[in-house]
Each structure stands twice: as structure tokens, then as C-alpha cells.
Image 1 (cartoon, rainbow, N blue to C red):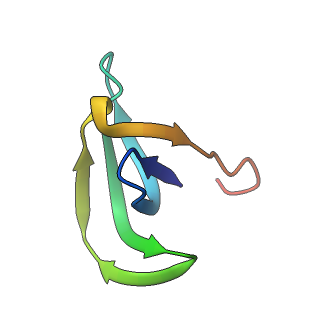
Image 2: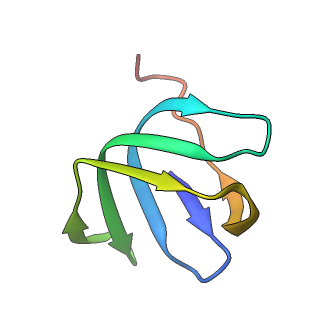
Length: 60
């Protein structure tokens, strides 16, 4: 889960991350209050917009 400064949440598989914390998510879903509101194939999130990241250690 990637939470942005504007309150948006994106869930998906993180496939790339660079030194600026820009993150590429595969199979991304935008969620609000744990409810999906939009599905995307791939989404690139700019690092300066990211508030925090929650990693799921159980999924591989």
C-alpha cells in the first residue's frame, strides 16, 4: 500500500523504485477507505507525493 500526501491509497505489486522514491506499481488499484474506486494496469507514483509505504511481508 502506498499512501500519498493527498490521502489517496494505491495497492499493487511494486516492480521498481528509484533513488527519488518514484515507485512503479503493477496491477494497481486506487482505494479510499479500504474500498477500490479505480483499477489501473501500471501506475507511476512520484516520490515527492508519497507520505508512507506499507509493505506486506507475507506476499511474494
